[in-house]
Length: 264
Image (cartoon, rainbow, N blue to C red; front, side):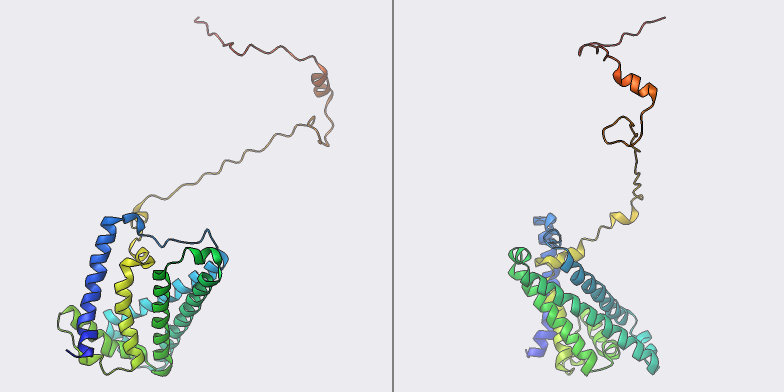
């Protein structure tokens, strides 16, 4: 067995087995760990400038990959016109750079903030480093091996479909540039890390929120009554208010008194 056969013919199935089996094991053993273990309460400002670009950029890039996987012929037909090809490539590059900026901000925050650094595990750092290599390899492909969208639709998509058919066509990806091969292999590594890291929170989407009724929030604002005789008030009390304030206090009811009701 050659290295290419092990990398592109065996690793994908091992990664899928680890992802499915690890997710089931984690859910049955500790379903409450399906969380990103957010550190927002420790620090919020840097998290916003890192998390928002990272998630928006990553979701857009993943959406483009998914589109090329599902409708590769439409992508190739779109790229047949140079202007449309430039638009697609520049858009993908922009979102990739956005994701890279967000990832660097998250890594900087985790390394420089003492409170966040204390709660960081080795798995957190491993996942961030794998994502960094994955993003850099994708950007390297987009910049130095241009027309990555056509490459993906023409070579990677048939290879992925061959994996699903249990007949992997290794020849489709074994001769691609090194950056592209690193990018493909990085996807399988992320799949292995999925159930054993914070990334598992991507599987815990609250589907019940979509169908539940809208939450109705009612605010009751009580306007405070203005007492002219209160200390610090600038309103002059009337004669009735002055007489009431000088009248002797009335005796209060005993603490155990109650009101009786008569039946007519």
